[in-house]
Length: 253
Image (cartoon, rainbow, N blue to C red):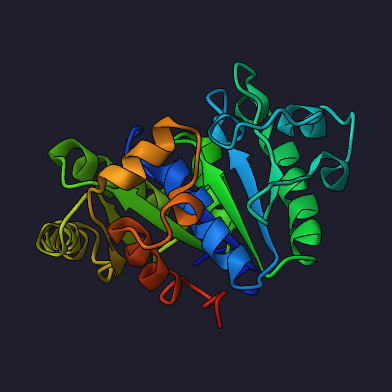
């Protein structure tokens, strides 16, 4: 199980890059902020941070400054035009990747304290299955795995869940299938569930929902906008609203 299931920190992860994890995180944060919730997003995408780029922001401080001890977490936060706060990542900087694990845990200890000031904290972790990624997911109260119907995405999502169990003793996770129809999401969930139950003896992940391919949503990403604000009635955003109601800990409640 996760180290601190009482915290309000949700890790958003994926075994494979390019599945839309960051856009999904930022849009979920926007929707929750518009619903009156205090939301913090931490861009933990080590070395390839891009949340500030998608938001068209240029924060004074980043995660690199925090881990280097130059500023505390709260001083590094920036309030975005979308209503949530952001701890920007450190693109081109190893950031958390080279941080010794004891220091990574100290960073997370400090994050847990800061996160208490918010209703929910999303940590957008790097794609992949590195030791640091697995540690961040294990320290979070829950992990949401993002995948697409692409076979390689499904394989990598399974690898992430497998290693979380084998190396971190995290047995439960949730699933969001991006760029997928309801039927496609059901197929992905079924295949992943069968593999987990057959080979890992773990229960099936909770399917939070699917986000359909949507030209308005894709267009917002390309123009450095968030669909949740630019196109609130779009099909993808409506799907995200449904997913929020099923998020671990029900931050909308």
